Length: 338
Image 1: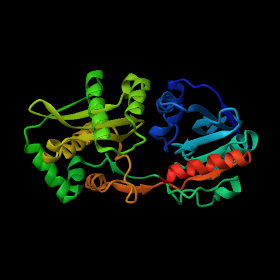
Image 2 (image 1 turned 180 degrees about the vertical axis):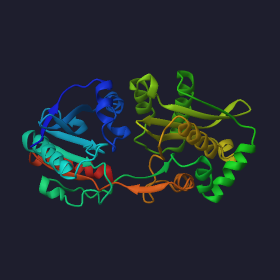
Image 3 (image 1 turned 45 degrees about the horizontal axis):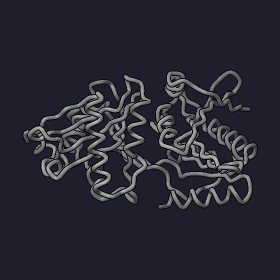
């Protein structure tokens, strides 16, 4: 029988734990949890599950308590991590779900919502309902990923023809590219991103404040990396890349009319891919590619790199604590569906 241990972990402790698992992600990173607490309304709990002396699973939970009343929301995104680099059976995942349900729902009377970290089929012997959870009615996260262990020529040849033509055009343009993790370059990106998001009037969970908090909390070696294209000294497009373990992820980007005209976005992502490959990264996730949710222009841009698509298992949930927690569930479900 597994047992949950919740305590404070340092950044280095949590990173070392995550390195044991092949299904790690940015949203389970220590710095991401800290940034979400700074962004307001959340607090974070990190836990490990033991089987004897062995750590079999870990998770980072975001908690939104209800003022005055007990209970609240527990949001566990792309966890529990259970796919160790040495290999474990899906029964470990089932035990982790059972313990999370017992601890948060039965003991603390909270509403638990969980987005699994695996693709459907990896836990075919498991029915989440046997662990107290049920389908929450929300599809899992979808994206595409590029295998950076392939030869660079193969990766370029694999680009869709139109995307590759745009890249060729951008490489012939008189664009200057700067990349790095320095404070000035990041501040320039953040200023452009605030204007870009505000000017387009769309809502995103990847807010400028979240990115600023994430950059503050990340260790120096893993700061978010900025790639910016300049035309005649003026920034016309930028891309922000996160790095964790041997994986990297496209987090956010900006583009002006001049950037789109010169296909600067294609050039920036290709330059990022080449640099990541040279520095030993194995996978490059394009950070959300969902035919149902991604804006058409963004969808076309990202799918042009011709990565391998994936979709994680649907979200699951469990409600405890009576009427108050059912109201929490209703509000969360409404917000998730928006």
